[in-house]
Image 1 (cartoon, rainbow, N blue to C red):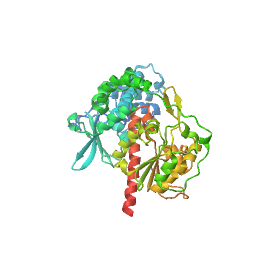
Image 2: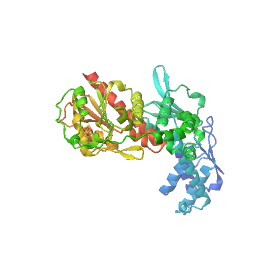
Image 3: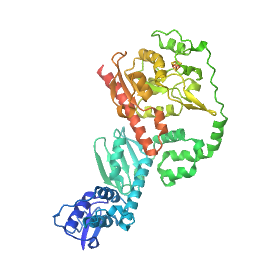
Image 4: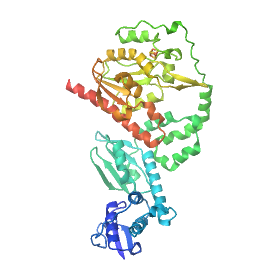
Length: 480
Ligand code: SF4
């Protein structure tokens, strides 16, 4: 009987090396006892095996399956995987295609369970902000069902590369210091501090994206099982949101829709174009703008706002439903999300100039609701008149373009937001003032994302883009 002791629960390298040597030595699965050494037993009894004398070639699908199954919290997984490898090496090359085979079936079920656990970890892990001696870091507690921390650490590095963080779990902890990833032993929930202002963000965010008219409690519990709630700050808002859903839905139905005023012949007559006047004059003149048809159905123009010497100008797409009613940009759900992201990026909205590429709300009436419609190229081009005046007056060092319409308005071409985002790009040379532009997503894109992991990932990327804008301004200030 051969005894193989692996260094830790997901010692893939050790398992692979041992499996090669065991197959080469023709030791059948029934003659092997697999185990994982305890912390204090690193050099426990191990059968020494001769180096492999033959090359073990395995189908790629089996290797991929084994890399996943080894993360399963199932003591028999090493024996199971070795049986699959042994049988494949003995000539069953198409073993994995026999889905009714008990070994194959068991391995596939374990892999599926690991993948499900991985999805839950990516969706429901929440960092808490910790400040120690003036330094800020982030700590998260998660209790995975399987041994998935090592395999998922890179995912969190990619999402939160700009943060210093630790993910603590009962069996293993991962740490990112901004440059290197490391692992230590498991931890306890007591190691995670309680005070957390990020909890407030999650509650606001969740409340903003919660649509009472689409509430399906069964589906919600299936996607967000109760066992994860204790680590989810936003879960505190759920009972109240469910309790008030019916009343909020009725209020939405009862809210009257604004009927679009009928356009008149006179109103289509173009106004004489203003010169590069002051922002206050332009704002007043724009209330009479008829450069495109969008004025006709909107409640009012939504001009930009903010200090005229702002170093950063944020440009969105167009006024939304709430902005149209209030006459101010970015005050609806997308605006609230933007405010949070700006805060996290270290930017104060009161010091920024915030506007839209298109100043009137474009929508389609649907019953009592007004459904947002993206402006087309001609409307963006028409409204650029006002945007150019805003830009000429404010002359920002950095222009943040929130989404494709803003990108098109300023760069004069269609943009691929996800490909071009996050890096400073020069403005077209004929444009004055000269500064840099930085393209990123529109916050409403984050509100529309269907699953939690994508929301977390994209929100972090959005904050990172805003941080880049802040850094650009700071660098320019330092250089002047
Ligand atoms: S959307 Fe712009 S260009 Fe069109 S009418 Fe309104 S202000 Fe004028």
